Image 1 (cartoon, rainbow, N blue to C red):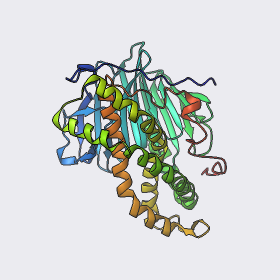
Image 2: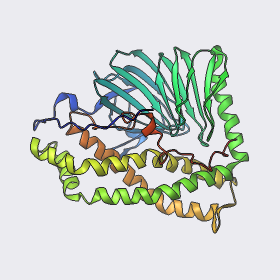
Image 3: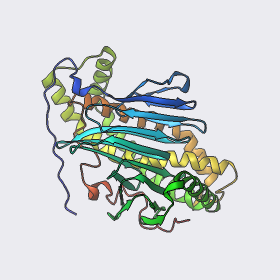
Image 4: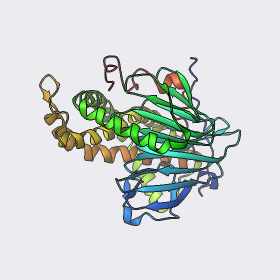
Length: 381
């Protein structure tokens, strides 16, 4: 597959933030308890989340076992859609302009959500991205589920959904045919009754959880190994970004005052930051998903599953002790990267100069960023 080159374009900005760069992309249309939002290096707790609350670009939403929400996307640049968020789900929004098209990306980290698109123009696209696949709309109503073990299920009540896995293979979910992907394997089609999609998804999820419990140590070994390989890269990339503290602190202060620096000043700052920020985002895309998967797996470990050796000299008990020491600081750093991406977009007409999808499938599923590297493909259960 031919790789597309990344182009960076400078955009003139006035001192007052233009309407096109406003971060709001939709609002909460319906809500049940147990929903919180990570935004701007902080967390909006469930008791402060309410119906009608605006959702901003780069927000991360999290539901607990009782949480449910419906988010209406209604920005002039986004597809008109409703995102229904099930309990125990983590995902984030990223709306960006790619060429002449407006892309709405829903980054599903874990759990289940469904998307119903009311209207999609020729210059709009909606995609759901997981750790090892991209789902693009060819229809109007579909659901995506990611299990704690990394299994993926895509179902469609209407239309077709393009499902592209980490080999570049494309299959389509449509009424009567679901698409499933297990860790380390390719997508495959499975028949499903359109009249009973909810029951099918629930039964599928329960079956994958039982399979995970039976093979918990193998799942922990795979994700812990990936975590150990990626964390050093993440820490180094984050340190490189923090070498630009002068610019970062200035942007934080400007955000506090509701300002943006002058055009030439912002242009120079963006040039200085973009390389380090792009590199960090590339690592973060997979690392964040590995991090949250381990949080889920740690819960099963605490129930007695997955006890044993991860590698020579490292038990699952010792690994989770280390993970517990590191995860709070990592969460703060990951939130900061999302916040900086948002601040950069505010200085760039509401867009980040490139994202994973703009780089093409070959770059998105590059060897270094593939979750299941050679040797991990046996993780199938």
